[in-house]
Image 1: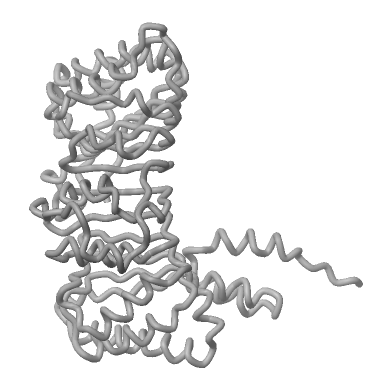
Image 2: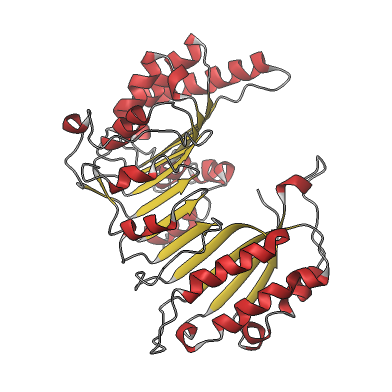
Length: 397
């Protein structure tokens, strides 16, 4: 009987769906020689180095970290092609490290020559030993890096962060959230490190996410900034921000996410290509101020000719406490506004209801009663009747 083989293209599709199931991928690697390379690429595609040693047995965690990291380092030294499969590296909770941890981590990082994505999650850059800092700086300058994320990143100096970012010459996605905001950063009018970085506006970003970094916003407006942000496809801005700054991110945005600012002096009319708008971190308890802010956003899009605005998907994320029915009354104004001809292109208006952080308990997230959805839906008769409305109840992670 002739042997029937599964086409490699189909094998790759199957393995792609097993991305989070490393145990099954390990079994797939044993199926046969043809499956081995594809399985290994997915097994080693992402490396996460987590230095959260704050449990009741920190010494055991340090030992486990060193054992795992040394094993990977040795494996990649013996089989460099496996190291080339690593496309994403994430460092978590790097605040203070022992010499052994830093030495082992630096050795492993230097073997990853083909990274596409680099993430820092709660990293204290200033406290890192020079050896590890140098290894990470070299990785940041690798031409293969196109995505960089720094969440709860700590450095007291704008110049140090800007210098680090400025050498990522092929960066396409940048996500920055600075620990404690550093709103007092003084962004200079000219840069002492400008000559050492790339030419002004030479790094074309497609996606930009800024969380609680008002001190960083002026940098993208400086003529000497190496990042070109005027042709972004996707922009996420939360925290304190001057809404006028949106003008500096061009007219080609297709996806925009905004956190509540309370600033009613806003104009989004320049966004002639936008398809998706998300409004996040809104507290329903402040509906009397939130709804006017949402109204201001959409009133800026109205025009006397009634021309269609291209927006197709609107998401409004609300954090709520138990409320009385009348607390939902202000949202009727949004229903009336979105019923105007200018917004006929809207396909979905998705309300997502979450518990407020202050109501989280040690036993998990509190449940939001299903009746809350009906209270909101009753205030949105046009959206409900048009079939555009979606109301989801969830929990924040």
